Length: 255
Image (tube, rainbow, N blue to C red):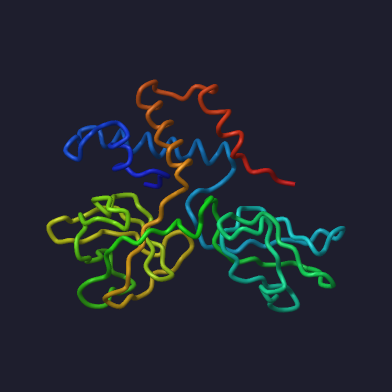
């Protein structure tokens, strides 16, 4: 079900309309394969996930913590001595839009023992702009944590950039702190069928009026996914010389 680009994106890329649905199963499979290829070859995830990584400190440089994954948002750092203040930690690179690969403590302080780093992990080149306003919100009564269908105003309305339909199967949505995967759309009832509490988050109740946000992967990565998915459809496989140069530049380097 997971893919970096949506089926709607792929249809537009191929010049198909919403009514050209005969090949949807093949198109989805190509998108999923292309997404897996990109992530496996670059050793990165392009869809954010909440999680905790347990790390052991390098005794030769106790002020520096090299992260095993790309860290988009730092939530907390726990050690055997208690919680470390996030204000004492500097992230590298410094830009908030880019994921951190290293955490450094201020002068005079050191990491010690085993650490648990909790945060949002993944890669994006404009993380502060990754969540788009759908222009829609929870409607009806309170959305219970166990509810599989979400009622909104207009499933086919425009998003913040005037793109319609705003909701597309396969999208990652966010309502407050909960991530939700959109798996089906009821257009007549303006309802979204959802997998609740995905990517490490927990399904919780949301009051009517809570805004629904839509995740968009980095545009360059999304374009790569569409291009490779098209190659899969047209050639029944990806040639090494078509994929390696672009993906090699994106590969995550580890110590």
